[in-house]
Image (spheres, rainbow, N blue to C red):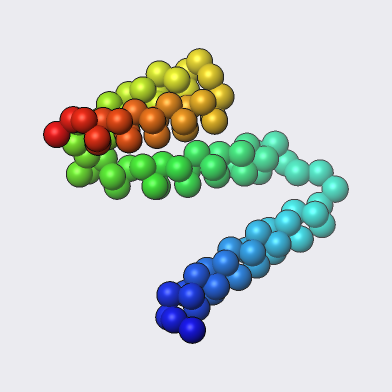
Length: 98
């Protein structure tokens, strides 16, 4: 088997173990403090930011257009609509804008 396969498998196992470990720790508490809950609710946005922010350093017109559309859609619609609108604009802009 290739090295890539083993890297993907190790990443999947590590991800699974961290998720299960977090669930096991949190499940031991009867109630969760509101500040802890707020912090846990902020994790998806923080992860998404770490994926998007580095790309903005090398962004061109297509990426900036997608970011603007995504920001506008996020004010009005849900997460899926925001993602689909941003992805569609990015794909089209990369195809037609140079």
